[in-house]
Length: 483
Image (cartoon, rainbow, N blue to C red; front, top):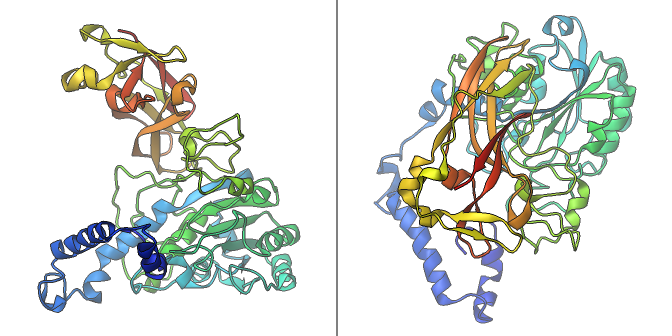
């Protein structure tokens, strides 16, 4: 009732009320919630034009600071999924005298960058227009009528690929496939997109670059395993500055996963497109350049939408849901993302010092049916939980060749997934800017009562006795909790 943003309630609400599926109390509660928020926003305080935000115009919405932020948001959201044999970044010096073919239904339409909720954009730059700022000899071929790709001209696309030195494909989805009240029926690329990508890749002189514009995940296993597709980039729906941000990533002016703006625009970039200077400004705490969801294979659509259990059930073949519990195959995992630099992680043993539980008196251990011994978090109390907090320090090194701001994701892993434990759990993330060959220490605060606990069968939060593992990248740090 409260959060339906489509027309379902409008269409079926009266019938549902008459059948007793919703009550007058349900409707009253929803209305109270909706109107209370609007009242708090001052929307009933007279003519909205005369309210605090009633006269915000384009000169404020489109000021330099806001356009910089739009570019930063687009950059931070781009994820590099594949980069075989250093296909990316593209060389500006080589392409200045070379040709590029931009192919695909999402390559030259600025509105497709905006997604589902947006106001009038301050600038309008398509990916093709952005790439023209780097390569003079650039040609665009749509290849499909739209993202649905039920009408295609693969022959023209193949011809463009054979005559160009480099090929970038812009594929994915649009608002005809995914938006409020519109859900996809499968996880593949729509229509003839996969065939178009494969035939263009076969015809191209070099491995092609595939850029995906879509909100939800798509199964691109075919592209992941095809050596003729050198790189895969997921850009989501990056907004008004998305075309610029994608071009900057493809040409190495922005390192995927990096949160640092460049001090100036590329000399090759048409400044009139952007209307602003890009500031040097770090933005700590972001984890751009990593997937925010698991990308499942096509077969995942066989799992009923009406079954929203998180935990897997091997007896029935139910695979579970989310990175925490899913036990099936993935196309790409939650938190996955590549960079143009190589990073290493190592827990600093001197800085990571978990406290002992032996100093906490009166703890009562209980055993589950599976034999797991655990301690009740509520019985431990707030004071004991505060005393158990400890720092986890991770040494991160950028082995080059590029500077970059690197997201550091701290996970908790249990030795097994019995008693309903998740396989892993993200408990913190930070980002650190490192020059090539530079190293730094990143510190996380770990609260065992919050981060190391799980839900017991009866809903209580408990900490299991025994080993727990902190994990960053390929490195792990073992914690042992014994009272």
